[in-house]
Length: 320
Ligand code: RUB
Image 1 (cartoon, rainbow, N blue to C red):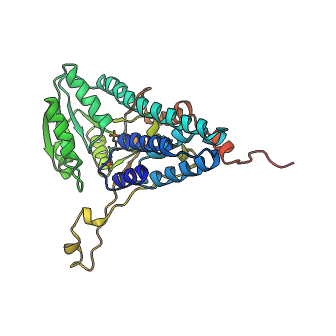
Image 2: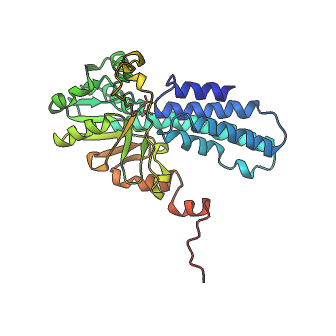
Image 3: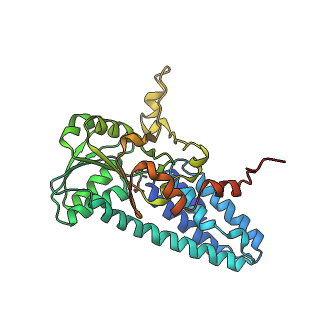
């Protein structure tokens, strides 16, 4: 029940943002494990795997979701009893939720160091991690001003400006297409991430790459705030991040779209910003240039190319 309800909320975007999605999925697995009363470890594992699959299938882009599920489910196979398996899931889920919250606080403090007194910052979409840096800089007494985009079609910018307003930060609210007109008034762009690939590309809300492109052209630095669990291990194998395409109705009501027989409404929810347009990625482990993404995947997520070979039993030795 909790799993289907959570999956629905993630799909409908009642729960959104890569960090919140990950924590909510971990919480759903924790509750599901607690309520799964079987004494058979195999049945327990099957039930947990089915729940994990339902959650992972909700939104395809935010890699925080499969990463969180992977962390919570790790070691399930090796637990000798259902009780140990259950305790393990509960413990890992609790720890994940806790460290995910702490990570935002650490990112805030590290990110704020890169914001100077007097800076004008532009942000796109609604990222808890990105906003935490901005709010922390303000809390430290730096006099800052923000440009926040509207974020068509789901208007996440509204959530952003409410947070900034509540923190007492001077904010300008602009339509997405006004970014280039204002970029010369901006000192720093700060955005969040749904996924970071091994080559340092950042997948984030549609429009982020246009923002970063404008910033690059205007020589404005781009900082990405992303917890280590938003880095995508499988990109080591060349796997691409799949970009969610949502219903066209979010962009144009069906009753209008239906009258335009030659028009197809396209609604990709995310885009990819190449590493060349990004100056720094702020993680809870420190700030890194995007080209160092592999280090995060290997050292902090524990996935090196060797782990993939082991996990997928890829035989690297030539037959004699
Ligand atoms: C949200 C979005 C956010 C990232 C990071 O997209 O693109 O920038 O998820 O957010 P959506 P956070 O609204 O489609 O989920 O820093 O909060 O994890």
